[in-house]
Length: 375
Image (cartoon, rainbow, N blue to C red):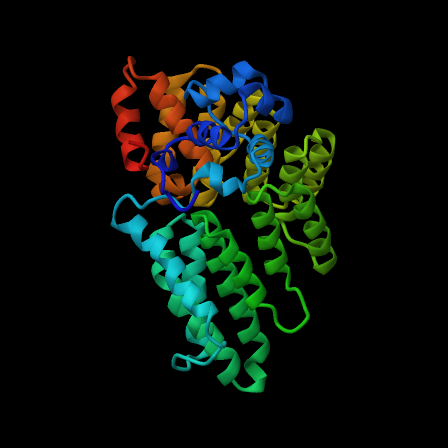
C-alpha cells in the first residue's frame, strides 16, 4: 500500500490489519498462529472493539504480515489543518536538503546566531510545538551546513556540534511524522567524519524503537553508552527490553535510570519511563499508578503530553472512560500536534470514540477524533 491510497489508511490499525490480511490471503487463524494472539482478539482488533497500544504487538503483527510498521500505523498521516500540513511539508524541504552538498547553498551565519536559533528549535521540540519547529528546521539545517564550511578554525568544534544538534532535531520531527527513512539519512548526513556523536546515537535508538527493532535499538544503545553518559539511554533501553518481552531486563534498566536521576525533573521523567514499560508489558494498572505518581509540573510539555497518553490508555483499559477522555483532552491542550502524530494516541482515541458513543463523553471524543483526522 502506498501513502494513503486506501480509505483505511486514515483509520485505526485494525482496519489496516484486516485489509492486509486479506491481501496476503491469510485467515484469522493463520495470522493468530503467527502472532500469539487469539482469533477472538483479532476479531476485536479488526472490528474496532480493541486497539493496539504496545509497540511489541504492533511489530509482531507487521512481521506476520510482512510489512513495515508504518504500513499498519498509516504514517505519515494526511494533514488535518494548516499547521499539520506545514509539518508534513517539512519532509519535502529536508529531502531537498539531503540532495545538496553540505554548505553549497545559503548565506553564512555567525556561531552566536546559529546557537540562538538551535536553542529556539530545542525549546519548540521540548514544548511539543511541532509547527514552530517545522517552520524553523529547513533554514536551520541549511545554516548549520553552511557554518561548518565558513567559520574559522577556532569555531569549528562549536559549528560541528550545532550542526549535529540541528540534524538530530530534524530527524526527530521526521521520525514522529512518519518519514523514518529520511530521518535515518539525515542522521548519517550529519556524521562528522568517522565519529558517532552521542546525540546521533541516542536519536538512532529512538528511531529503531519506532521502527519496531528492539534488538537493534539495544545494540545501538550499547554503542551510545560507550560514547558517553546520556540521561535518556537507560529509559530507552528499558522500553526496548519491554518490547522484546524481557520485563526483568527492563526493570534493570529502569533501576540504572533511577541511580542517575539527580533532580525532580529526572524523577518525573523516570515515572514516564516506568509507565511506558508497564503499558508495553500490558500492566495497565501499574501504568496508571506511575502516571499518577509523576510530578507533571516538572515535565517538559511534550513529555507531559506523552505521559497523559499513557494514563489515558491505562484508564481506558480499566473501563474508566471519563478519566481516559480527560487525559486525552489535557494531552491535546498541551501539545496538539504531538497527539495528532502519535499512532498510539490515535489508537486509543479511535477505541474510546467507539466505546463512548452513548455516553456523556461522546461529543468530546467525536470532536477529538475529528481534530486528529479519524473521521
